[in-house]
Length: 315
Image 1 (cartoon, rainbow, N blue to C red):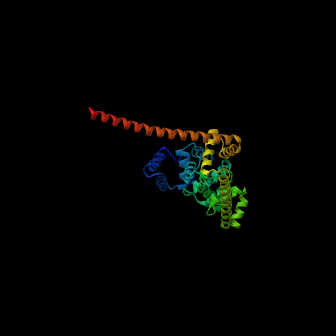
Image 2 (image 1 turned 180 degrees about the vertical axis):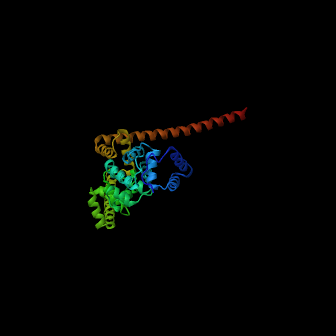
Image 3 (image 1 turned 135 degrees about the vertical axis):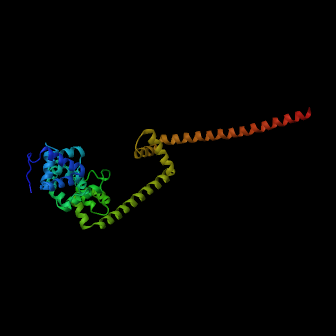
């Protein structure tokens, strides 16, 4: 069986014959048929065809992978197989070169997780992918799982990838990330609490949070009651006045409320309240007078109508 190939063997006629077989039956069957006919090694024939006949000036596997990286951003298993065929290099070797490129090009662990996930999701073997990156199988799997667990819009950008990786192993990852953010834990501290206390810590945290919220609510209600009793206003009226001040000044709600109570305690406020009350009384008086005038007008109109009727009868 011939393993070495040369231009002397591949005359123009044989090249045409091989090309016809491939166009009629596809690359795999066409190459196999030609190899059997001339007693050639199938693997050697495939490599020679892709490197010297189909593409006489082949790229190196590294360059082919880099071109695909530039074009697509991330690669799938079929890309590895395509580079293998085009360059006449084994898939295992191409995958190792892919791993070297990923380690050099992908400084972000999120990008590394995306690269691993895209290969595993398209049929690549976990062991081969992990080995090409110098990772253990379980660690490569965790990279891919963490990437898929947290889409970009659900990530905590002030926490590291390791924080997300540790939280992804729990049933409530978002809660753990919120707690890590709240207490400014490192990823190791987060993992330690998850391993040692787990859901018990979350349960305690929920109880503490509920107690704290109840304290705040009681304090807020007591303050509202005190305000209502001290100035004789209902809370809804105070809130409306605060909203009016906020809209007029553009201040925050807390600052608008402070301005309201500062005004409420001032002498000008009392004078303004008295003036407003005086104007309200005047308006009410004018309304009553207008109503009485309207009644008198209707009575006068009825009287005039009665007089007209009497005059018509007298005629």
